[in-house]
Image (tube, rainbow, N blue to C red; front, side, top):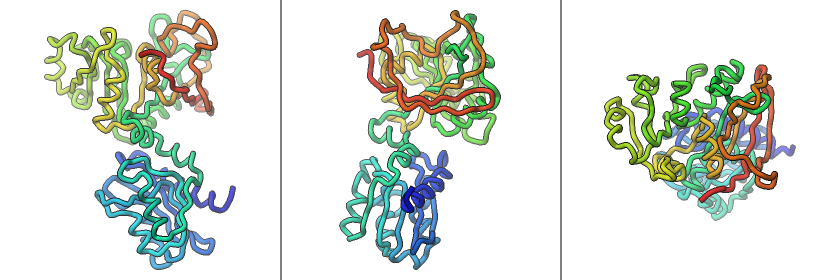
Length: 367
């Protein structure tokens, strides 16, 4: 690893401190170096607060003149809730700027790079680009498509079953895995399940095992079958819960609205919520990240539609058997050539489980 890469790696470490607190802004880190010594560091701490470059420049002071700047994301050149970072870098008189990744936000999108270059500052773009983009993958996906980056999570047995033949699924994974899932919930803006999961498991869909904010809870319920006694209809959970439905059962809508829940009426596809329309509506609400937790029919439909960007599987050391429920409720491929391909598998041990992260090579299998 080169010295420049080491400095950018440090900027990435700083940026990670802001993950979960900067929404809707991306997490950004910045390091300022002069004569081989780090003289300034900073990261974006919260939306509306100073950006990473400003914090780093404040630490460097007048020594920033003639220094090198390493920043994980393209500096902004427009005035939002804070002044442009490009202007701050120019006033400080920095010599070179190394940028990890461009910013796809239409208000930036190359304008910051251009402003620095026009001012005569040597600008290098793409240093550890893949790692910098991965840090803000939800922001990147949202800016590019207007839809949330979607992570599908499930716990399963070694033979790929998420529940027994009777639907029993508590608990497949170990406590360490469940804690990690709650950490994942805390980093996402919304969490989604199908009504079948609500009926079978009566989940609360909250962050309990770690410190963090609860995401917006979303239930896909095409015919409003959510039971009256469901935990999500309780007084403390209903106001933060949204039900995505169709116009098929308008007579049932009032009882949900009376509980303080929000209803979103989506287009219908074969009598069910059109997931593409739902994803578009979530994007309109500014939801950049979505955690999909089940059930199998919802996950299968989302996979077929090319809506899942990332899968996190927790494999537990147990076998359920052939009659168990598979994670994706879709018809099996008749040939391997028809199988849905995944790429870039990553794995690690979590307690007694094995966590595997995999990325579908998204291609819509219907429409």
